[in-house]
Image (tube, rainbow, N blue to C red; front, side, top):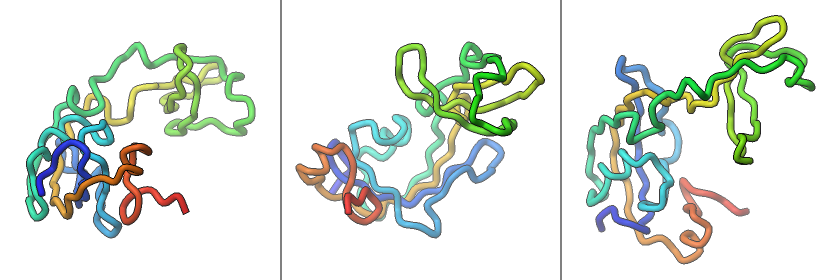
Length: 162
């Protein structure tokens, strides 16, 4: 069975950046399970997996435009320190959930802390990064009606409603 829209795909993968630093990997855990063709993984990887079958191995380099986008400096801003009430200590690298101007929840990362201001970055941590995947397709199967309705895989490697 080939990877196509509405198929459940299980992959083993290792993700590295341009310098070869491992950013993420499924090694030592269950394969990543997703429903193909509904935006569960980054577009560049999904496109590369289209038409592959269980047992196929591939290496894919995904540019930022097909991954988490380019960095947008407009998403970096200094905010008053007192906006972090409830946080005893604010340090570089900490992440907070906040609401965007459009009302969507987003994650921001602290990139600088000064006496009166904290500089935050709402870019995805991998924005602007070319992502290199070493992927093995483990399994391809039809998604169930329930999985399609929920938008995610159930069972091994997927979501457990237990």
